[in-house]
Length: 329
Image 1 (cartoon, rainbow, N blue to C red):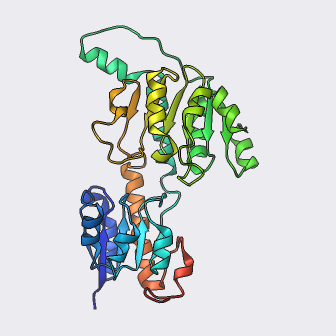
Image 2 (image 1 turned 180 degrees about the vertical axis):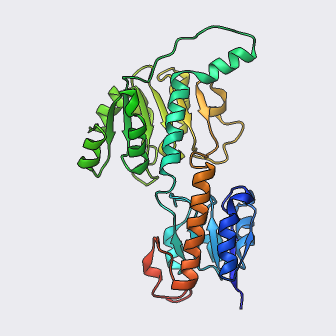
Image 3 (image 1 turned 90 degrees about the horizontal axis):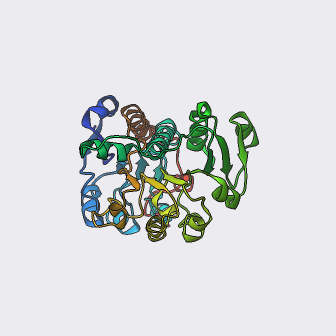
């Protein structure tokens, strides 16, 4: 007998799903692809109302959506971050939630380095100059020998620190939980947040979005940062206060910003962020390399299969729901 449906909402080219589809077919698990662009609450609930399992992208799974999907039993986030899923509601409703941690580490770190170099060497400015028929250098600074501050020192930040080694940077890090061994191996020095903000030429954010990290980067931080410093965010948009960032750029407190994530996604075309020529904008695609995307899709699919064969995914985030069925009190 064919098993219950899986809804795939992870946003990627269909060709990236070839191996994953083969695994689902081999297990006799029916699946269908949803529309990752139709994900407001009504549209998402309509897509998921008759499925048991979801391979999720970056859509938001609110209590209201999950309550309208009575058959939903498991959500596997194709990626690491799961702040788009109301975990308390999922647990209340008996819905298992899992993710695919660690697989996007290299891709995101490589993107962060790319954005740092793009800002430091003003590549966008050069591109626009040539297109306008202009020629010649503009003042730029090398990354070599500069101080790079990593706010958060988890997997992505550590990978970035490794990629920075040939640039002979002074690398600072702040994290609530310190791994002295990892820091020593990568020649990274732990420091306070204030010292990091005051002394870094480059600040790169690598934090989850939590109550205590929301708007961590605000007016006070921009006032601490060195003139001519740059900020890169490939973690979560809500860590930076957009209003304060726009003001800091308008007042030329910092030299440039590169954002792959935003407080509101997709970013509205009329956002104040779109009006500055000192911002590099990217549509939340730091991990969207072919190699990493295929790995995350395959890992998500294997987690779905584990749910059907073992009763739970391997990377379950709310194990308390395993002991009861949805609807139990």
